Length: 280
Ligand SMILES: NC(=O)c1ccc[n+]([C@@H]2O[C@H](COP(=O)([O-])OP(=O)(O)OC[C@H]3O[C@@H](n4cnc5c(N)ncnc54)[C@H](OP(=O)(O)O)[C@@H]3O)[C@@H](O)[C@H]2O)c1
Image (cartoon, rainbow, N blue to C red; front, side, top):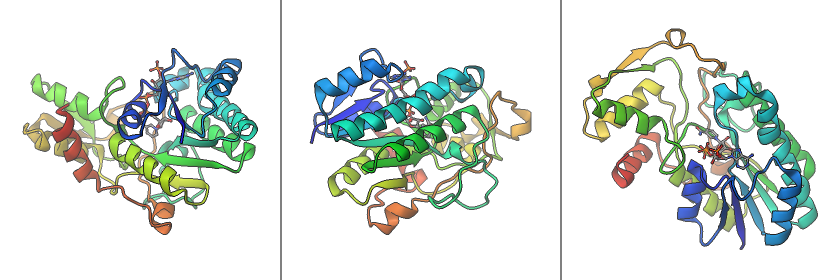
């Protein structure tokens, strides 16, 4: 199976390169997904069986400032890929996000819940989902949450540990909950999905559980042998950010469970693996 991965220099791109066998992994410099002609040229040249679109504009605050860019990369480009997938006959696996939800629910969101994004990022990713769905039948949309892992430009865990080691005190929100997910676990789940080919469509794929970011940060410090006292709990009101974020965006892997393919571990076990394997 010839697999092409976009966004190759990102966190998930790195993990997919580690886990898949001989994928073609293209960074932005080799494939800019917002250049529709370039996209067509590259896909025609490689003729993959599967394209995993791990490229995205992921800076949620920057998306508020540059909505046009966000909607092009996160919305239109997956749609163009969907049309090319239909034409060239490859399967498209689009990565999406928990931020398609507002966070008003009190239990983990399932695939049956109706998206209601509250940010430009969430809206743009939802446009991407809808355009993929409208352009072909042979697609997987995988929604995930709070990604961390090696590679890319850094992540929450790495920042927490680095700052704690410098003796800096960190303030982390205690009233925002998600399902932080280890990219290596997600990459292994993607491999399983492509090997077993369950029915096409939408799947949630996260590490199990719904910690607050404060609890997650404290656990990271504990696993790294650092003092949990380095983090201080704050409320999101004390930490204003440009983009609105859902207060509760944990996901449930409902459909993966149903097809017997939910191999994702609990959030704390995944965090421990990352810290032990990569020593961020
Ligand atoms: N990070 C999270 O917490 C999170 C949570 C839920 C879902 N997701 C989704 O998971 C996927 C992977 O995320 P990630 O954490 O691996 O993100 P990441 O580390 O930010 O990687 C995304 C990559 O896409 C590249 N990119 C941006 N615009 C591009 C374009 N026009 N053409 C080609 N490449 C482009 C980026 O390059 P530059 O750095 O040069 O811009 C970056 O290397 C994305 O679909 C994201 O929406 C992420």
